[in-house]
Length: 108
Image (cartoon, rainbow, N blue to C red; front, top):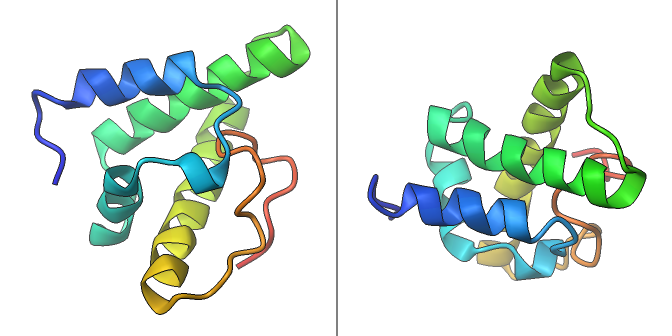
């Protein structure tokens, strides 16, 4: 369980790790995604930091807020699936993909 005191550390991790692969995503983040029926404000902040850092690193540009909002939902859903597949011992098709990129997310 991620505490409020730990949240800034995870946001910093997202900002510093734009090319993180799904297999390297913090298990605590995946679990936090699966515990709620929608992204919490903290998870929105975490994903937004990673999405924006990824766009700057991969494409050298900022993204419109509407795109970021959509990507947060797509990546949150994938994180829920990654967590569930991990519990079930099922290989996820996105395991080797970049965690903060929504460009090639496998549909759930």
